[in-house]
Length: 362
Image (cartoon, rainbow, N blue to C red; front, side):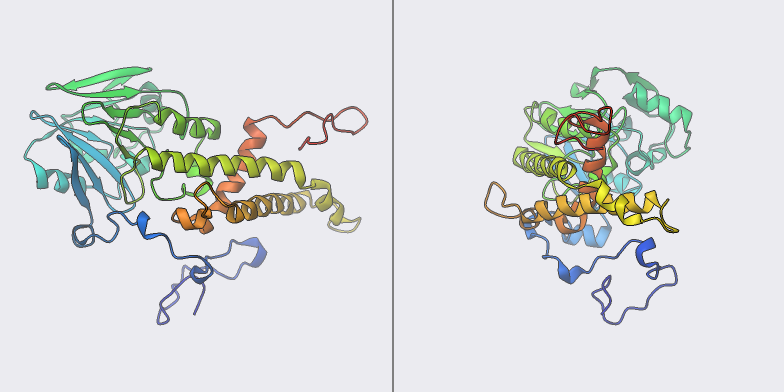
């Protein structure tokens, strides 16, 4: 059986490249990993999601969650039209079907969490007569990089705004760059439901490279900002389940371990070990190759620590969160690189080639 398929009768597709050796990237061997915890499943295997391609449920008092099993969002009934949050292409017109399942109100308002196409790339399904509210930075980006599937917002704000539709209120807040520029928090205070898209991942490890976040310091901080809200239910934009404060605290603990071991790796692994391996022959100028091995060593050092650490509840991370063994190496690399870009290097190089601190790293 091949490493990337559990079906012994599969036929390898033509596009599947697996012969690049060190120049490529390896595939996952499922059987080397622990099965994911069932607590992470959520609606993934629910009958309606499997049959219809989506799951919809009322969270509380007119606030609904709709999920494809991997992407999710929410919408709010006001009695005089629906407020839609985002429009992931993975859901597409299934969002409209989910709305029709529960009411006959039209969509009158759309709130963009941020500008990324994987979350608003189907917003054109709502038609031309809706008001689209977003942060000014989101409008700036969609104006600069136009996409007919992502209509430009019609109304914007800078820091805080209250959207009131027929007495139903949503608090919109921008607290600075995190996953992306313009990524906002969307809070229904009466129902205590918070949409914090592309931040926490209830029951799951964050997607690779810490969800491709542009500002990792801001991304980590956003988890703590979530806890400032008096919320009961979290909609995250991904995974197959709703979250609560315990899920956010669990994600924070994972990130804190990730940050701790990324710095430990940088303070421990010696880049010169790899540059010295180049010798004086034909490969003496192959510094990029040496750098690749250096960063692989950093990543492997930190990943090993992450997979072996006993966490606050006595379990290892792979026993607590779905996808830890597959994604942690990517998250570790990202945390290492963003530590180098966004955090202190513990000093600098002095004249004569000696560092100002024994824990200085390049």
